[in-house]
Image (cartoon, rainbow, N blue to C red):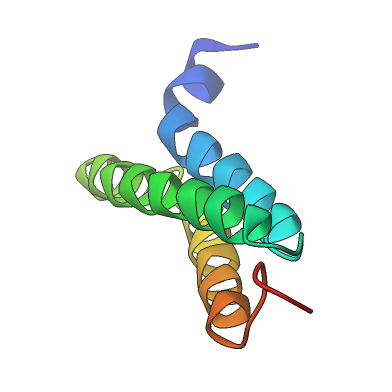
Length: 89
């Protein structure tokens, strides 16, 4: 791996991506387990996504693609929770 490729990656963005994806996948578990797991991971992903976005914008927008996908997963998770996901199906 070259040093230029290592500089372009944004590990915080990838962490936000994976936390958001895990939150989306765990959200449908019934009996409030999914609400706690999916919602909690989604909140962590939101904080990481904001940090990663600020870091990416400071580097001329490099490495913010995972943040975009994380934001989509976060929105889907909260949309699912708002219609009853994670509570009782």
